[in-house]
Amino acid sequence: MRLGLQTFCARRGQKQANVDRILGFAETARNEGCDLIAFPEFSVNGPWVSYDPDAHLADLLTDAEPIPGPTTDLLQQEAGRLNIALGVGIAEQGLAQKPFNAYVIIDNTGIRHVQRKLQPTDSEMAFYRGGGDQISPLELAGTRIGITICADNENPQLHQRWHTLGIELLLEPHYDCIKRFQKAGHSWDDLLKFNRHDTLHRRAYKPAQKLGFTTAYVDAKDPRKSFEDHPEWPHF
Image (cartoon, rainbow, N blue to C red; front, side, top):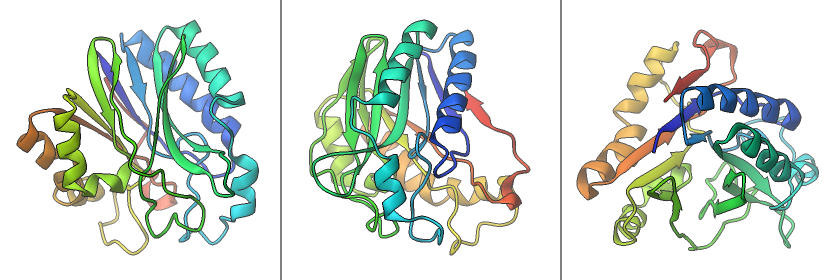
């Protein structure tokens, strides 16, 4: 499999603009020969988190969608046009009030896989409900893939479970670029150094080394002006 990872800043409440950018990035990835382009957590709806004072549950309830729904239908159509699979984070409307923090893989045949974040973090609990213990791999382009969303990767038992299920690639969509309470410096380079020895090491390097599968960590670009020194960041 040729995999693309696209770091970008998804804006809360700007779903259509986020989707438009996802499709633009997907076209670039297809031109690079990618079978799958993976985006960060929250990539469709943007982040609803408690440390954002302007984020309100009522707005998220309006923004969330069922899966399948209008956005996933559009992404399926575009995946067919571009001949590439898409991995996106989306707020999934369900039967309870709060949505799931979900990650969906879509290609021209439809929705290939949905993974719900098992345990929302403290900053998400006002907005999202947990997805339970349900995990399962998918097969795409001859590769057996697991998906674990952001802080769920702090659980070594989950990585061990993926190993037991025989995955070759663990996709780790994140929105962990930086929080206001972290002191990771004042530039993108500072931030990368901070994460490389902290979050990235625990959640990606360590399980890959221990269990023998590949981890693909795709993070979001922080929207604050102090980190706008770095362009959008594709990896193919």
